[in-house]
Amino acid sequence: MPINNNLKMKGTLSLAALGGAMVLMASPAQAEQWRGWNIHPPGYPNSIALEDFAKEVAKKTDGRIEPKVYNNAVLGDQPDAIEQTRNGALDFANFNMGPMGPIVNATNVLSLPFIFKSPDDMYRIMDGEIGDRFADALAKKNLIALSWFGSGARSLYNTDHPVKTPDDAKGLKVRVMNNDLYVQMIDELGGNATPMPYGDVYQALKTGVIDGAENNYPSYESSGHYEVAKYYSLTEHLILPECLCIAKSSWEDLSAEDQKMVREAAENAAKEQRQLWQKRVEKSKQKVLDSGVTINKVNDKSAFQARMQPIYDEFIKQNPDLESLVTDIQAAQK
Figure 1 (cartoon, helix red, strand yellow):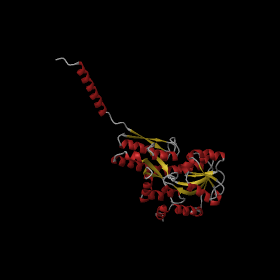
Figure 2: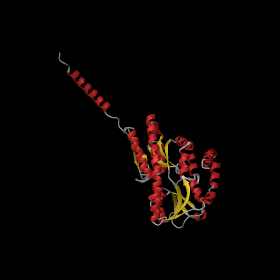
Figure 3: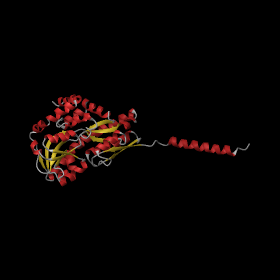
Figure 4: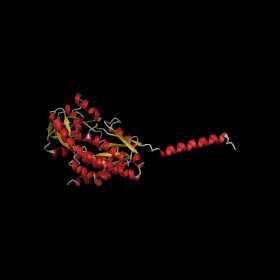
């Protein structure tokens, strides 16, 4: 009996639909693209570590996740990037804890001048239970801290004269990161603090809008600030940790197995960053010395530390809930 043409057409369509479904089932799932923020240029220790983190995540997840690092703050300045990561517009980032203070109040403890005695002390403390407490505070603001990077010791540099005593900073216009504690720090030294984006500092130094700034050796060198601010004084007033953070929304989208793999990659990145950092410090120090920069030893840091006591007193008065963090960090270094 001849087959009805309509039935023949339906059969053809059904087979086509089935074939298409089989092709879709056989096709691999599309990789999830992760966007990562970084303020530093390519080749910088943090940049290398972040890019290796991205490669390891892609490898460990068999390409199901493909992270990409955007260097040189092309996706916005750090305050913008923090907000983008918190709301999931960015997936991961390397953040300094200095500008984190206005968003995660507990991290202001890390910005208290001279809270850490050395980078090694900072690493040891942040890798332990105290670091977990800061990670918990970040998580409440939708940022998951996967590991801790270092950023060395920050010191003052300026265009006119060395700063060997607190009084040498009197009247200087000094760029600081956007945090009230840094403004207070310069005020206590008798200077005039000027918060501004990192990318604006070189021109501001060159044109005399500011007299100086404060940062670590690699940033002082890589930014070119040493070309115009020829006096680098080893106050070492701040030793700030940085986090490799992931957006809480991106983290929660991962399976428990993938979370473990991503955290392992982040911890490996932190180990690499710390090793590369120390090598870069020595390289940057030599480069600025060769350029004619005067590096000034500060023989009596206690004079600077004494000037900071009002900052501690006011901080604890305003944040009594954070006093235990301050005293626990201090006690861990005795």
